[in-house]
Length: 404
Ligand code: EPS
Image (cartoon, rainbow, N blue to C red; front, top):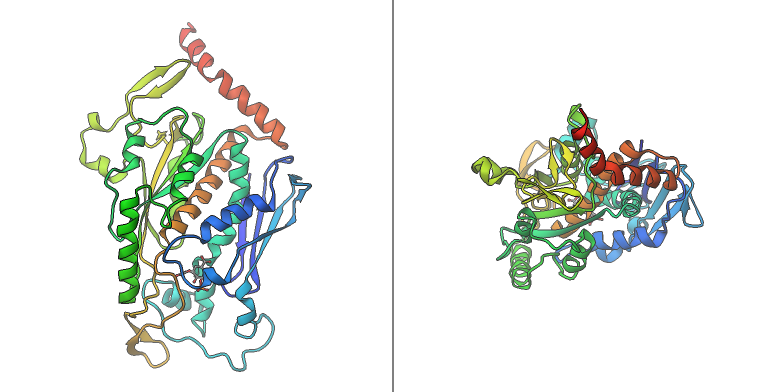
């Protein structure tokens, strides 16, 4: 079974990812990972830190001549900002002069982290709860993304809205109506959304959003928004209804809501389907050549917690960034008096980055289910098991139902 763990604080020496359980002989390179890290750093409205960092993955183990060995893959991302934090974040020097932070920001982990871990400095909570950690997630999950590409499974995303500004025509509706050409694949979606500085698909919407972000900056405020993740090429049969934690939709939702500042996740039509008649929601089943298909895809590619073979469609909602340059009210934990929250260097909006991070988390979850179903110690073995299943799926169904 695959697993990944990340380590590192936002302003420490760097970030570490350790990935285990992938089969041998999978091609992977630092360049492949860096291309994804670069996508994560983008987006109009990101903070000054993105000018300091050029997140670069250094593969420390588990790969030889660009092929996985089947052993743990460890990846290091250096923090360029570390040189400014050597004293403040020293691992083994006692704190002689570093001022403690005693004023928690509303909306972040500052107060809760300090209470839970009995910290004597809120900086200890800020460092690991920061969204900086997502850089190491993207590095780790890029291995999963590359693995899925071996099976023709692609993952893409686009930003649906920022600050309540939505598109004229939502591309997602085409997906729900299953009105997309067979040639469509999620990586082509990224070629469109990555062109936009806020990763939206409509130019007029982009202009309105950038103006809204400028307004937020002027007010010393922040924004959130919504995004869609789309996975194409996913075979029928991933996930199962037999256990709560074998359910594909549940595990995908968990992986996305685990991202810092994500407060909502929907599979397919999600909350909208709660208001509709069943006849306007359930996807009628049809035959397409030698495959089962659906007339529509409002289920978002998952029925009975199992993948249907149609694109998986997930929508996420990200709350506004917690650090406001026009601070909200809080309590100073030293004086226990009402004060204004601290200003910490930060992003104004990070929804474009969040959508890229969510792609990585979806890649991880789908890779987990692919390996769970098809196993294999080498990529060749996994691919053999996969083709055997996919090629026989339809004929086996016919035999089952013709059997007496
Ligand atoms: C981030 C790097 C850090 C995080 C930021 C995301 O930037 P800085 O060094 O300026 O604090 O703070 O995350 C947040 C804005 C947050 O609220 O957690 C990154 O690399 O994505």
